Image (tube, rainbow, N blue to C red; front, side, top):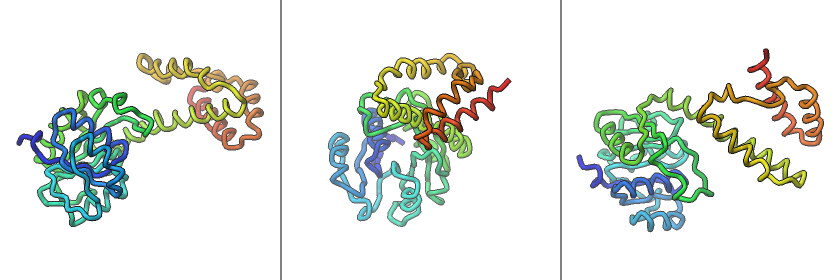
Length: 261
């Protein structure tokens, strides 16, 4: 089958839909429809991808391949619904949802391991260098998702639901939790009228280390050194910030427990 000539539909207009849509378009695939609960919101993306826009609630999905780029609970709702053609291959992009969400339909998973936000420029986040994890329910859907994945990414990884879910969990620690720490540092800087940009060389160096060393080998800081005097000063400085004090104490205890001699 020539998958470049297949009719592709994308349900959703969020960050994953935008980035996946751009990647598919650049790889030469034929995107026919964007489905959205808010068609006006989808107009800009549809114009860029040169496709039509439809209201989700009013649509019957006849596309050969249908990408679900929406929250997990919405995938469950639509994926088992009667409005999808029996001939469609349903593909979701979730890191934590099993293929069984589509029941007995031809289905697959194409999960890009990357963070996307509204602040990203489309040209800054490139699919080709990102790991893309794939699964499929049967031979037909397997051939389709593999062909598409290899067309948009240089790093395609066959996986299982359990491995994908645990990879997603690891990604939460490596990305979401780390960014929350940045946000906490930014808050402290603003509160004390300090410049957050002073921390950027430190942040960049810390991030670059893990390309060459195990994070366990790169750990530093007062908890790693068991510097009780510094830790006590930090905790005292957070006495009027109970949430940050709890966060600092919890992470400090975790680091100390891991590296204590």
